[in-house]
Length: 67
Image: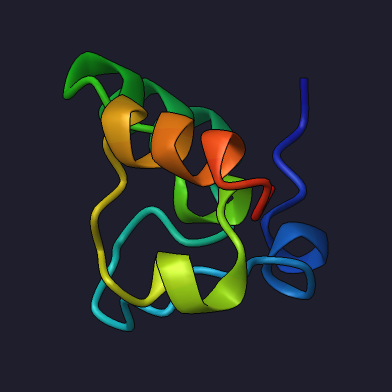
């Protein structure tokens, strides 16, 4: 399977500029799941900017109907 990094970068909402996984979604997802997190693209813009990518933060946002 061919990586579509350039195409993915156009849609990537991650605000962490030094990230070396930007646009490489498979690596990003594996990294975050290994750390009990979700990638930034799963969060609304303001929540993503907190860099709290935890499952718990995501669940709170769902409960608050922000997602």
